[in-house]
Image (cartoon, rainbow, N blue to C red):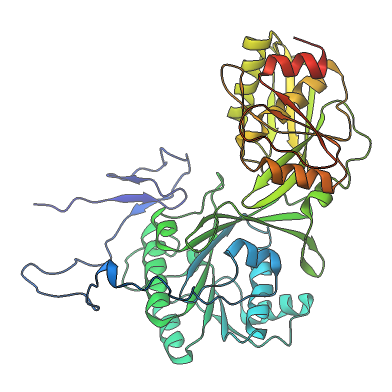
Length: 454
């Protein structure tokens, strides 16, 4: 019986049973290739066994010391990693082209090497001389980092076995190719095989491996999603090219909190840490205007204050525009629907623009009330007081739901000089000295008390 063939899209990783010129999932042309197997697996009747003997869970020592971590000295990176680099860990770093992934990792490699880790930086996209030019621009020419330029996976693993480093950076995983897989570099099969071999090497040889991954136009790391399951930590490097701020976000971390963020500022000398992102995101706020609202959010374990900006104008088109930057467009549509259905405030015939200042992306449902306030402020041409922060989740019924870590949000707001906070009622009662809290039960009362509308 003929073997069933499998085909994968090199752009989005979608798997199909037949080849076609255009991918049905992402719409890209000439990106589908046959997915070759790495091996045939064990032969029928073969007898084998695991390398290590299974041990009962009860034999584990409850007083074992925690895993040792190596600090890079870059506090924002160490925070996102969960407190430093764990030995034998595999880390995947993704981001848009030109966002600064290579710059960040070269700076991190220099710091780790200076702290005693034997570090090798292997580039599949640049020659060693080009990496040295970047290091010279960043002032890292004296860092004890070994450089390599290679794409053949077999040669890389052979070199690593000889050199025995403690940290290896692969830039990028899409350029690596294994001669055991019959497909082009960057294909789904090649990326999966290379990630598997490098991750396995890291676990068996007590070596930490950092893999750089390209992203698709949808912002997802290119290649099969199984790569994200193989590694211990997945980090996304976010930011707008025209903006100086960069956000390093953990979306998976077996050794620390997920959704933790580190904030950096891009400069001519590389990436500089931002230790107080709230103050930086609000530094250019100036005099508040209609549509401007400050949201007290939580990113991982860190409270962050960001500004939501809304603009509403009459639409000359039959279908009004809804443009969102830094927030979920579907969530915006829901908030507008709740405002119209529960509060009688329509947005028909109006163009709506929503932006999160500073280039940061907000994923919290706790931002619902701040978005509603920004929309109402812009629509009614009413300015929200400059010393007020807002947070709270809105349900489809129009009720306001309590959110977590309210005390941390209020403390961060008080630290930056805010004196009033508007949030949902219910949940644990929290009070912070120096800041007055107004609790609202539903969206209707919020609209009436704050804007005098509804």
